[in-house]
Figure 1 (cartoon, rainbow, N blue to C red):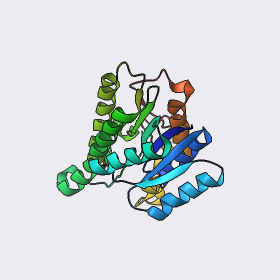
Figure 2 (tube, helix red, strand yellow):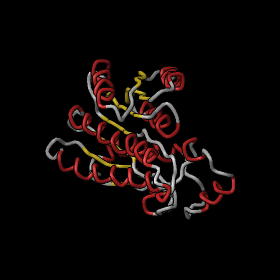
Figure 3 (cartoon, one colour):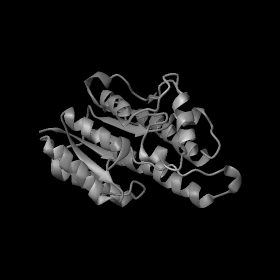
Figure 4 (tube, rainbow, N blue to C red):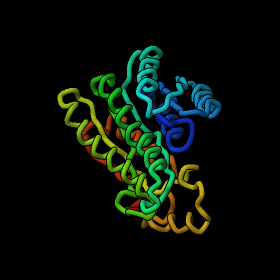
Length: 242
């Protein structure tokens, strides 16, 4: 029986590339998505076209009942859960002085509450020897204006990772976070001018934006045999951005 992985937010962007990479590494994959069924089915079809195993399951990471259903569907289909990658996230921007509590609550609900809900189910269901991987962000170290809600949510994610690492003592399950710098995805590029994108691309010493494949490579390392001794860490995959 193939090892099974859940990748949240994998109908597009970094999550999509991670799901496809894990299939190439021998995993059966659950493609989780919030709302775009067509995009999720495209990913599943792409995986199945190369002989991989995948299903798509709709679930909102902030909804505990949805995520419980996601994990039950995975177990019902594949019989086990070996890797959980919580890639789902949103990044609306707003200045703290504007006091947009609705925006703040929306970001916290998806990025932080969502991580808590997914980690909770992962802690209950991941098999011994398994891997749990959350997503933070290297922008935490930069403190850019308008990133307050986003940075607050991701700082919270890192705190949860460190705590869960200790709570799973003795079960041979690693818990880590990946913290990308700027990556050329729809989420990042949205609402940015060409000049802003160029400016971001010059920030890392490697002088380019990250690509989804750069991040998928790091996740594959953590999920694979070579990553077994990395635990309770935040891997800042950012080309030297921060």
